[in-house]
Image (cartoon, rainbow, N blue to C red):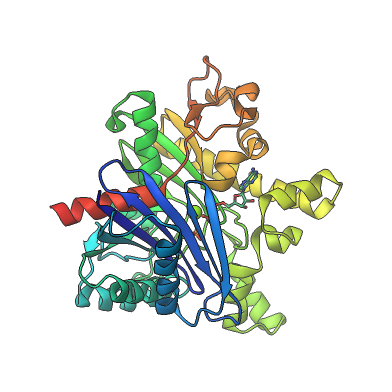
Amino acid sequence: MSSVLVVNSGSSSFKYQLIDSDSEQMLAAGVVERIGEPEGRASHTVHGDTTERTLPIADHTAGFQVMLDAFAASGPSLEKHPVIAVGHRVVQGGARFFEPTIITDLVRINIDELSSLAPLHNPANLEGIVAAQKAFPDVPHVAVFDTAFHQTLPPAAYTYAIDAELAAKHRVRRYGFHGTSHRFVSRATAEFLGRPVEELNQIILHLGNGASACAVAGGRSVDTSMGMTPLEGLVMGTRSGDIDPAVLLHLQRRASLSVDDVDALLNKRSGMLGLAGQSDMRDVEKAAEHGDAAAALALDVYTHRLRSYIGAYYVGLGRVDTIVFTAGVGENDAMVRSRALVGMEGLGIELDEARNAERSREARVISTDASRVTVLVVPTNEELEIARQTLAVTRA
Ligand SMILES: Nc1ncnc2c1ncn2[C@@H]1O[C@H](COP(=O)(O)OP(=O)(O)O)[C@@H](O)[C@H]1O
Ligand SMILES: CC(=O)OP(=O)(O)O
Ligand SMILES: [Mg+2]
């Protein structure tokens, strides 16, 4: 009963899942957070039972020890489910990494070197890798890149209209993110419909804290809303998404913001948080229901942007077979789904409001039987996709 450990490491936290390598069953999941703060937190869930601990966790290496302690105390036993490989989510793979890659010293150097293109993500991913390699020195570690699925973008979609030489020198182009999720969901949708993915033109809407849209033609990403970094595109929990770049210049000149101030503003204090004072969609909706005008406007801005991307990708694909909602908001928020697609009957998109309102954790169709475009909710599972890709490389 061997297993794969999947690690998604952030700057002050990491999430993990232990997945059975044969049945693909999730054996345990947990999160170690507030690393480096006086009071760290760890939670570990097995069969729906969660154990929580509060203790100082100095760094990621200490965090992995806390995780190992949780396995020892609450199971499952790593002796009974030996870890045969560790899969790591790495956000930025640049133009270099287009498939899951066994992590060697050179690969670690390359991931580090790509940090300039993902300063918020890659250094944290790398810390998790280093700590995990210490905790599990004898098994292969595999990097699965958020950008990999988008390597099929055509130049027209990934090129920014700026000085070409300067852009090439600094590797400025659109890379796209959430690729592991877009890939998983596009295939899960085809499987659910019993149709080959090669036959389908799909628009996938990954709406979580981070959010992105992807146009998938025949299983290949042909356009996506995130760019050189995960800041471009849709309105997110704390990120602005698309914005006129001159706004940054204006704020630097007129509001005396530094480069770091602008970085923090756009990545951490914008989006729903900036507009409504809350980043969690549930809180924003509650506030709007209670008559909060700022929250209502935030929802309007969020759905306006979402609809613009649906329109753009509809035109780009020419013919659309499926529109698929996934991730925290996409899977759970009937109101956002409804507002995203209302009034599109002329485009062959007809939501069935009763189906849309149903609550379920399963993949399902939420359009009417007459709708030319099939609209679905399909839960994403990035960890399972990382485990599958990790095993595929180690077994190859
Ligand atoms: N029932 C729900 N209704 C509306 N939004 C929800 C619901 N459940 C979760 N969400 C939203 O999903 C978002 C988190 O999505 P998730 O995919 O878990 O994010 P992450 O990017 O952190 O993985 C939060 O904004 C949260 O409010
Ligand atoms: C790349 C990215 O935006 O990731 P997340 O949604 O996990 O923040
Ligand atoms: Mg997520």
